[in-house]
Image: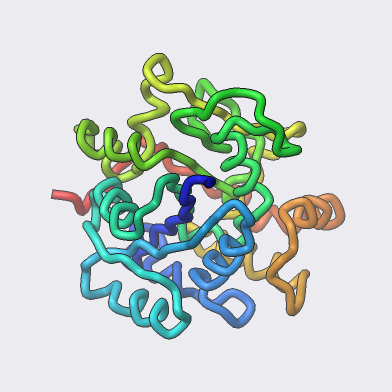
Length: 263
């Protein structure tokens, strides 16, 4: 029997750069709905859960989840590692797939490839190695990034998530969940999932008004669809490169940055 694999989507309304972004409208649906529905198309997942916070401002996220029938867990505001661990425990996950609610074009095929790579399978599902400790399609330098920002997928076993939960003692490790692993490459077997071509400079996440404008324009190019692939967006980029200049000046935050509102 395959291990119980759960996608956990972290979401909160009180974002530092674009408050309320996860419920912003994209082609007639809140962004969180776009992320949840696209994540749910992954064939490697046994379920999807929204992990929000206990802050009263996130009551709206819980209400949306109840209205849509999405499982929802509420936990710590800034200690997202604790929120993930408790959510994973609550839903009895054996493998956890981390997704963020600001990635409205997250691709189920990319999720599947990352999960399968974590498990030691090649693209055809053939075992080629033992299971890794951690897998991701985005990692900070010295690793290179080949997938666009906004397709970010990270995979870890429950046992290793619990290890991080017990041992991680840096604020950025608690807030960003997975640095505990990729900051110790000599300790953990890390699988860096790469694409054959480099599109790592493209930005399809939502952290600023410019990002939101671009993602709305992308959805407008695929009317009445929520199953377009990331490669179809690459085709769009080739046809309309000027469209992707909308957020070209937005700089990604360093993963070691923490929310200044933490105490």
